[in-house]
Image (cartoon, rainbow, N blue to C red; front, top):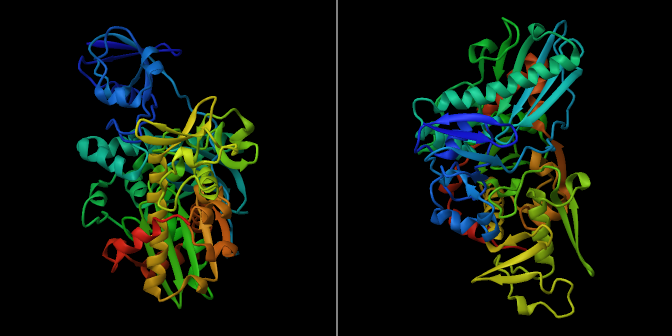
Length: 530
C-alpha cells in the first residue's frame, strides 16, 4: 500500500502501489481538471508532487510542461504512477463561476389550485441550474447553480461515455451518483434559503441533453457514443424522485422532458417550446451554442433540426491558455493603437482565456490581418514596424504563437485557432445544411434566436466577426438565455406545456449532417474565416 497526503487540507488517501494518481484523486472526490479524461492530450491535470513515491517523468509530460514547472515538481497527474508515499498539492481550485440561470419566458397558461413547491432543473454538460418554484403563484423562491460534478469524468459527453466503456461495471452508477449528489446539494441549499422542508416539494422537472438525461437516470449511455447512435429511450419519463436517490418528499414526482435523438435532447426541445417555434410565423432559426451546436429551423410548418460537434473550445477548453468563465478569465479583447485592451470577469488579473475571450481575440486577429482566412498566422516579419502588435507574434520552434498577455504569459497558438476553426466549421455547416434542406437562402431568415450559456455572453460582433454565424443575420439575432431551464419551469407549472413539448418532440425532424449531400464540401467552405 501507498499513501497520498493532499497539501493544505492534509487529507490522507491510501491506495495500491502502481495506481494512477489522477484516478486515485478522482475516486477520493478531489476535483482535478482533465478534459481529455486522462489520455495525456490536454495537459490540464497539473498537480505539484513531492516525495519519492512517483514514477519518473514521461515523454508526454516533457511535451506539456515548461522547464520551470518541471523544476517546481509539477506533474500531469494522469501520467504519474504511484510507487510509494508522496504529497500532492492541487494547483487549481474552484473559482467563482458565472452561470446563466435566466431566460426569455413567453406567456402560458399555468395549472390552478396547486400547493407546495416544485423544482425546475437544467442539466448541462458543463453547468447545472435549478430553481425552487411556488406551485401556487409560479414565483421563484430560490435558485442555485454549480459546475456539473460529472466533470471529473470528462468535460464533454463523449469522454463521459468513454468512461462508461472503460468502467462497464461501475461507470453508469458513478456518473449518476455525481449528478444526483449535485442536485441534492442544490435542493437542500434552496430549501434552506426559502425556509421550507424538502418534504413539501411535489415535483421536479428536468431538462437536459440526451446523454445527461441517461446518466441522471442511471441508464447505460454507451449506445449514444457508437453507430447508429441510438439512445436507450427518447420519450418523456415520469417516476418517483426517490427512485434515483433525489432527496425530497416521499411522493415527489420526477418528470424528464422528451428528446428527439442522441444529439437533440430535452434541452433543445425545451428551447424550441420556449421560443414557440411550433407557432412561428416566417422562417425562424434557433441555435444553442455550447460544446455541441444544436440547431432547429422552423419554416412552413416544419421543424428541422441537427446537431454539430463544436467541441469544448468555445467554452475555453482544449485551448492552451483556456479556462472556464471564472473570475480572472479574459472575456473580451480589443486591439488599439497603443496595444491590447483586455477585459476580465470580475475585473481581476488575467488568469486565462474563456470561450468568449478566445473568439474576441480571434476576431481582432482577423481584423488586424494577423490571421489569414485559412486560419494560419502571417509571418511575424510581415507585421509593420510601427504596429503596436509588432513583437506579439513570434515563432516557437516551427510554430507561431501570439502573446496575448505578458504577465502571466497567456498565448494564442496555431492549435488554438484550429480548435476554434473546427467549431466554426461545424456550427456554420449545420446552419447552412439546414437552410439547404428547407430550400432557403440566408437572406430569407426572419430571426435567429440564440440560447445557452455560451451564446448569451457573446456579442454579435464576435459571432459574425469570426464567421460562426453569417453576416446576413447580424441584425436578426435575439438572445433568449437559458431556455432549457425556462422550458422545465413551464412544464413544471402546466400540464398543457408537458403535452406541447411531447407533441413537439414527435414533430421535430432530425437531419444527420454526415449524410447530407456534399457535406464535406460545405464543411470545408464553412471553415474559411471571413
